[in-house]
Image (tube, rainbow, N blue to C red; front, top):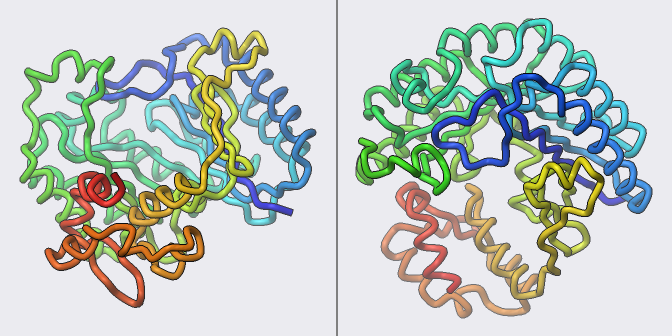
Length: 372
């Protein structure tokens, strides 16, 4: 049987954060959550009936704010998951968590139904920065949530952080890194802020006071050095983990493994075909087909994606793998690669090509030069 990752998009939140461009809908009452859960399960059953040759080894509840979902909805989804699919022993089952939306009882309930990995959205340990981001929780709320999660039996916790945010300095980011690392979560993600159109920050971008590009670069390098001090290894541009605690679900995307996304705005890659759902929640609830883009991954797209996604990973790409996929020589196809190696943005080691620390920070620009 082939392995499969399952992504479940839960698009509800209390309010959108100032930077958020994800598909989410403020819903304090929870009225649509039960209806959404029912339709999500129906679509899971339809897919599973047509694809019986898969075994699920990772599951990820993303959002939105999945921890807003009532416990009975989580239970129904998990029951359906095991009814629809063969789920491997030891499958990684993750839920994104906002500290403002769940208590000790709720965390214990998640653990009891088989969820074994928690991704807690902290973003910053500094109260002024949390307020600037529009977060609903304090650092104290996060610490309480983290402690409750440990008490509930979660031994695989990830914490999300951001850098390059309003009011942030190199010193305040170091404070965040050290306070979180001292708690010893198994995994830490650190993402640079991107200002997106349609967000609060997008509307006021001209008035935002943000760290400049040089400060952001220093923050990125500081992140690696501080986390390395505390026993974390970078395995992807924005992700650091204890040994063996990498996000197995996210690695599926970077390695172009099959994955199915259920819910609005969810994307999938199945048997070389990529498709994505619209954000139309009303059409979703009516049971309509909401796939708005569908394409087959061509041989050349597969080659480009091998380079683009493989270079995001710490171990990079190899000439042998490139040749096996494309039938061509890697550095002949990408003649600019040698220049980036000579200038220290790319490294050659153990037969592989990977980004250096300074290369990781400008990876998008380098990939554009290599691939286009």
